[in-house]
Length: 120
Image 1 (tube, one colour):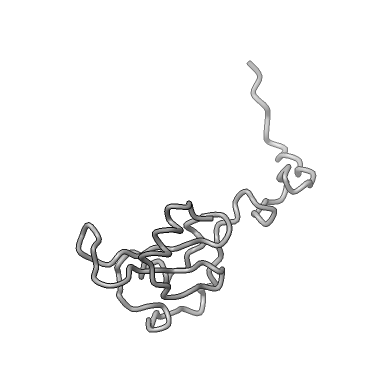
Image 2: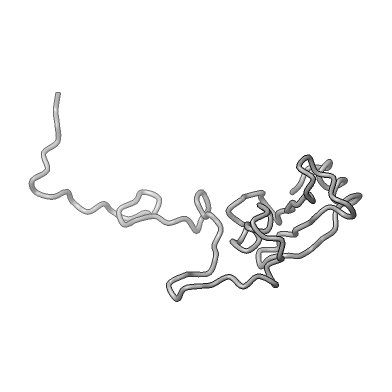
């Protein structure tokens, strides 16, 4: 859902370099770098709602110039405790709601017996 200006700039000056598992497309500037810092410009066109947490780690480090290697050429070490990247789900139907949450629709467990409400 990019603005019309971003779409036109991408059409005229962008070269698609890849796509992630969420459908986001990644671009860099065609030809000689002309960015304000003398580096090539890099950007992402999000699929659906623009949300930065949708960008997986390998694409994030490419977008922020930590590496010049695209994710398929990167050798990122992974630990056995790491889980697959998931975008921020806050505000969606898949958001986490703890037990007793009104949003979960469950009854709240009674408070501990030593709890005494303050009364002014």
